[in-house]
Length: 215
Image (tube, helix red, strand yellow):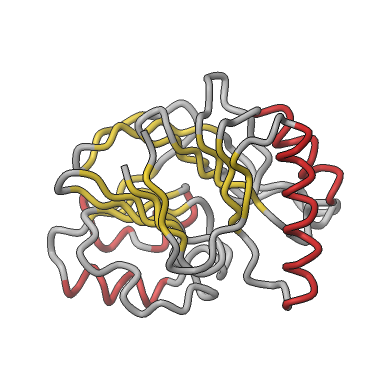
């Protein structure tokens, strides 16, 4: 499997003849992010993870493109019929040769006076876990974690605690599109520290467009 980091929270996973794209939102500048994809997975409704206009254009251009998404996102695209599948914690499905298991139900708290919105994390082929905007720890081993690097809902100490609890072999930073160059440098330093604490594992930020081969 090949993992390519795109802008902000978006990753592209490819193997054999299948391609999945997760969270191509409004901070994902790559205009071709969905080109050639068989399915797109959306963790939740926030603009930096879900760009409705982009999704609709892509699905209009490619009648074979399927979408799997949290309850709210699936509801926004319900007019697309059976091409859209609502996902929730505990679900599993197969698409484009990938086995997908869903873990997590809620976004991390932003406003304590409001209930959390739905957020679904995706574990692909038992290899790569993308948590969306949550610090979900799946009840199974996670070899490769898409690690949130920064967020309004997360402190640095929580990032350290999360990657320590999941204990992946590899962790590649996502959710970094709101940082300037100074912020990226600080975040990379903390991720490097987390890698050292874990025994010099492969924990790092991939630049947009950079790929790694897994497995």
